[in-house]
Length: 621
Image 1 (cartoon, rainbow, N blue to C red):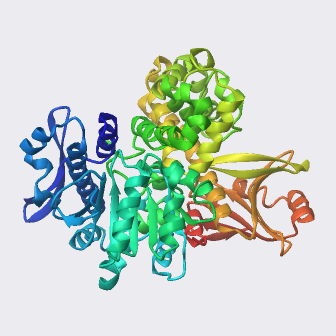
Image 2 (cartoon, rainbow, N blue to C red; image 1 turned 60 degrees about the vertical axis):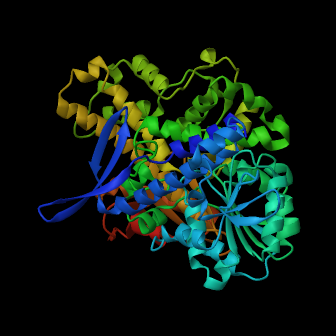
Image 3 (spheres, rainbow, N blue to C red; image 1 turned 180 degrees about the horizontal axis):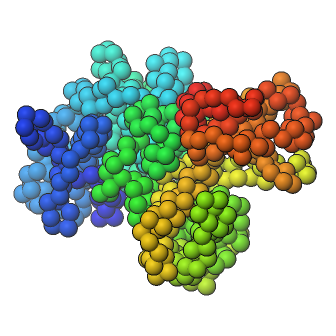
């Protein structure tokens, strides 16, 4: 096994929190503490009650991968047979006892020897401990589809779990293993793929498992199989067709998506996990509030739970790391293996020269607008800054032109540096239309971006699209980076602290307001499969959301406001009979006129006010 393969396993370990959890008793009360080492120093912080279980699970997961790393190093050609023997921790039978390891000889034993297959197979007691860690955890809405597949006797397909990192794929496998009866558990195995594995290794292991009577096989990190995209049909056409239940998941969600479209086409069922709705965020993680979802939504991690040392979207730095590891490297890893890299041609140079992550970050910041070649090649500026400057000038209580007087050029230069966003003249690889199309195509395949239509009343046939990011925390992290750069500007620092706080909060309020609109549009479109969902523009004014039930010749119209107060300005368009008449003419009877906001449910002048969190939780999951 190459050193490069071992490095990939180390990257997986680095993505999980180090250290451990300890407990201290203070004045009769027991408090949990998270302890870890960082930059050579011991760090410690108190954990909130809701953080303990998921953090403990991630630490346990890291320890498991550290064990797998020792296995991978055992296989590595970097160690001679003498060194392997000398370093007993690599072949200690006690260390291997929870695993059933497939060997070249096709024998399957409990820790008796390793052979050369880069696979680790859990069964028996190993499976019980594997599922024990998630016992009692709440389940995602898509879990029932996974369970139905495993318990359904008829299906001859494989099931594929596709989704970006930290969206619950491995947890769901552990949960369904925990649901197996004792009889089923005796016929089940979880296969952990190690770097350097090929489909020939998988085939030999599957042959032995089939001979042993194993009927339920769950693959974790299956896209580490180097020729997976070329040989995945083996699992469906041979083993699933012979009655084995096979579930595939892996960090490389794009690779699984490409396999679904190619080798596994019409041979698999697919569950996409990338989009985590507000309702799931609250129900599964216990974190309440649309603003908390805006700040941290996108991964199955509670606010404050660690990712590379901090919450996944706690800062632009951690968000950038997530973009690089979960998205940019995901694309690179998949396309290196897909048709021998031919589909990577337009992006290869950009990635090799360190410019792919910057291009994706630019897309993330500018995704509220058209994803066009001009967006990627024009000199970059912050849209949030421009909009907030305009709104502050028009503020009815305390108007200010402070954002017109700050050094915008310096601020945006600092933002670009922080977000690794490069202008056209700074990039060594010229961005072409081919780059734009490929980046957008792969972001769609990853489930990171979704189109919501925008309709113009002036021309119903001319439709645009509003591109929505399904992980709001990623978008919000970049807005926070804007605030950090604003605070460094000399003109801005000259105003009072109260004024600075008011202005920065107003900027973030604008961002949260636009993001709340996106969340409502996305989740309504996902839930209302019997309707068309879009934003409607008029020559003057707009409806933030229209839900058109074509078959019923009815529609609902909405305004979406990031406020917990009610006032007439919020509902003025909904109350405008001229605008409503134009909607009726095109989309039928208006069955509801609603303002979605953060306050309590109420009626004002015949127009309903609905709490946005209640609305989102009531949508079909």
